[in-house]
Image (cartoon, rainbow, N blue to C red; front, side, top):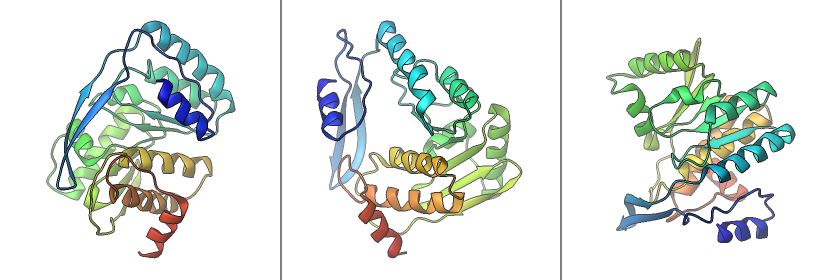
Length: 237
């Protein structure tokens, strides 16, 4: 926790973090072979209720100055009540981006857009036999949980945006070598949040998000995409 605090501070990020003295920082052990990410093993502990309460109070204060809210749900217990966080943000007219975890999307009711990858999406809706069936499942999921949009990242298949009463919007991925998918979902969620804050058209948002994710998966380990790298990637399309 202290290392993360220092790194964020040195990068000029406004941080509102609370150290939990009763737990160790989650450790993620990634197994990589021949530059391919095979699996991950997590060593973790649940945060204390006291720390979660302090985080919730911080959120209630900070959301009043925000342009967009991003909730990255790692399933580690750090978000507390996701539904309450979404309701507070939407009550203030803010778009909410959720990078989901698990199959219970009722927790994300009211979110502007949820961004599962293909495996996470299939975990929720089950298998499908065609693109039309995939779209039907998305429409049911959106209506059932009161979601505005569902953006499914599809790896080599690009990404598809599903919206109620509108046709899906798909963008193919650019063919390239994939070394490590670590951080790809976070990258997409971040770019989508930026686009929503700017009220950019979805076609532009998907194009930039697709490029940013393409840059990140082409690097080994946890990585970021710079503005110049994204511009170069877009120029190669």
